Image 1 (cartoon, rainbow, N blue to C red):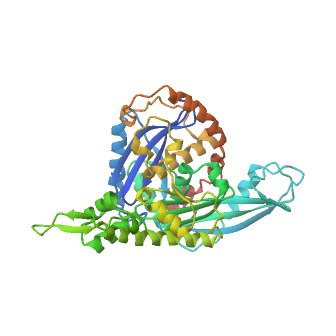
Image 2 (cartoon, rainbow, N blue to C red):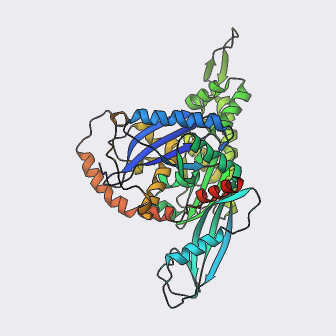
Image 3 (cartoon, rainbow, N blue to C red):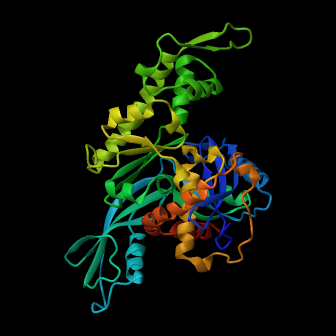
Length: 457
């Protein structure tokens, strides 16, 4: 265990579940999971905290379960994911004329360029969450990924600005604080999920990350190493469950169970003569549900979600064959049978499931490899990127905490594993570009939130 690294905690406040994962990087640059807890979420709808008390209770339950998995843990600060259909994005352009043209461009000038974008006009009631530089220009040179070290008179960039509703942001922060935690940073969920399931080669090839959660489907589109577009689609797993409940006249719990156990995103793949028997309510006769009907309902809603994905790709001119990496499906909803086929059919792009396990050290419990935890593991990766950029701000007195047996696989590790880990260090070096992915994100949201609070005091 490498005790020279901090323990970083991700908190994923979802519509159906709240997850807390604590992790630390080992000597191979992989995440060792030191604590894991989850709880059912009741106070969140479509990614937004509506009932603060219920959300606080759920966060505390998830936190208690995390401590139960590893009593040695101490958790103070957390990285929190943010989603919801109040999230919007816009493109802007910024330029500065340099004072000292004989000197090389410095990080300070780039920071000033980014800070200036925080003054961009946005509608009242919204606030800027992130300003993400896309590509830079220096004088007549275009499409420069990083202009530091260049010389020139004028430096500029195109920016992707992400905004959110002030009240929605305040509700998340209040819930976290009242649960006894501090928000280290708020991170847009599709960007967290992207960092967990995507490699540098995916970014360069061009890829769309589609994170199908409980309340929202989050989209992040990358092309030629640049974040091109983000969107939050207000339909997801819970809408499918409600459709099944209404369409087949069953309870919500039964609808969820049928979706998970027997659901398919392609009606043609469902057996025509297969039926599910649902017990009747209070002496009513049992119900026979056709598996084909169930698949028809799921396919209708999933096709609608994929139509939204296609619409957003067209908006940025990246439909057809421009995205060589295709679509990476992740999140709990990505586990639906035949979803890959439906996605490829609707969008015309190749699709695959994105698992977060490529960043995890070997020997962890299977559950953590599920796409359900992509956001939470991505939040830890974001924290590590912050740590690598701002080491002074992190507490250097790192305590010795080992991976508990409850989070390890029961099987004996074979000696080959070590050789695989050593080989993987080469891959880690090749994937360092992902830290640049996070390096483009600023930590302004917490300060903005505090400023808002001060105004109200």
